[in-house]
Image 1 (cartoon, helix red, strand yellow):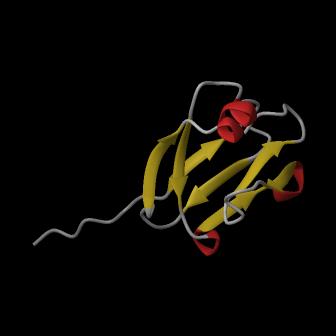
Image 2: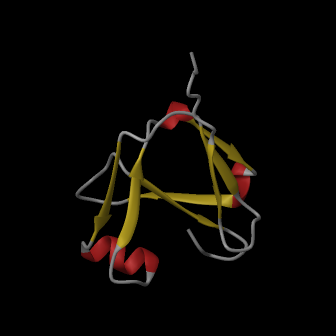
Length: 86
């Protein structure tokens, strides 16, 4: 019998000054084309992965600037203070 284990998902900003690990499977993933996501990313859409905050481990969290946007106050978006990228 084999057991499938999920390896943590990892990501970082462009300069790698900020990184994170997601410890569980994402609850949802979608592409958002709203004007907030377009402005935030400087692209026509954002690839969004929804996870609970308790399931994320941030590395160098002090180097991340977070902001809540409306109309979805449950989504926090963060950018690196060094490179300015998500």
